[in-house]
Each structure stands twice: as structure tokens, then as C-alpha cells.
Image 1: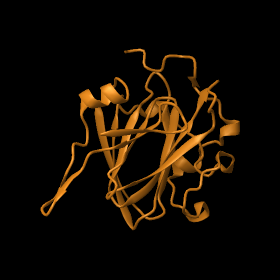
Image 2: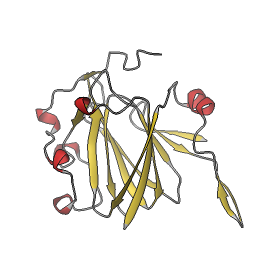
Image 3: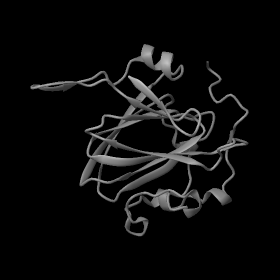
Image 4: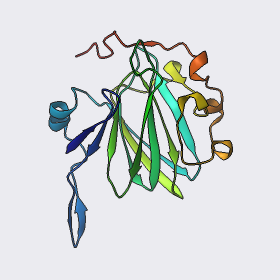
Length: 192
């Protein structure tokens, strides 16, 4: 796998080595050993999958400590614009984001560490989205930033005024009105 650094430390794009022939293709979608050698030590404990139609926007989600999560995300069918926003107080990149297009054809994955809000927009007719988490889902720790917060400067590549959002996602605060539970100078991975 190739690891592509982004403008924000810790956020990386992963391109697997894909073997193609007349029968189709094969690639290793995850190797604990290689991931830890090239990205960071992590212990994924839960895999999730969602299916969404064009115009659906999910996010920008996170879980508050001590239930915070890292995610390794990918789109196995269709196309999504995937976004991570740095919400670590004191970070030199606080409020900045990285956006990457994940598709069934490019096989890219995006690693989103703890301390970031994460979301995506569906750009194809439908999309199947999968992700690994390094902590279990804890509904009492749910948090979010408004996906429609224009101050973030995110080009979602779809009109946000007609996007399909959950009731929960419509209630998230904008970054300016938000008090982050994450501190840039704290160890967000105390188990390692």
C-alpha cells in the first residue's frame, strides 16, 4: 500500500496495490502489520457499512472522549466526497479540513484519527461506504459539527441546500459555536 500524506498531520490517504487481469482484480484492503508500520499503531474493533443515495450527506461526526474513534474509511460502490475537519483545540490546523474522493474504482481509503470530525457526501446514484473503528459505538458520546457550516470552506460538490440529512445532523452547531472536547496537546491514544 502507498500512504499519501495530506496537508494535516495524521490524516492520510491510502492507495492499495491492485492486481488486475482478465478475471477482475484483487487487493489487500487491510493489513494490521503494514498499517502499523506505515501509518500508526491501531486496534480496530468494529466494522460498519452504510448505503446511501445521491445527495445524502452524513456528518460531521465524532465521539467524545473516552469513546473517541479513529476511522479507516472507503467506498466500495459508487463515489463519495469524504471530509475530515481538525477539531483539536490548540492545533495549528484547527478548523481546517481535508477532502478526498473515494470511489469503487480508485479503491482509496482515508484514515481519520481521533480528534477529527468526519463526514461524506454521496456523489453517485448510490454508494456503499465501509469503515473500521478503533473504539466501539457509544451513543451517549455522539457529537457533531454542522455539515452546512460555510466557515469551514468545504466544497461538497453537491448543493447543500437540497442535501438529504438526518434530523440529528441538522441540529449540529457550527464550529464557531462549538466547544471541542479534544486538546491538541493531550494523548488521544492513551492505550498505546
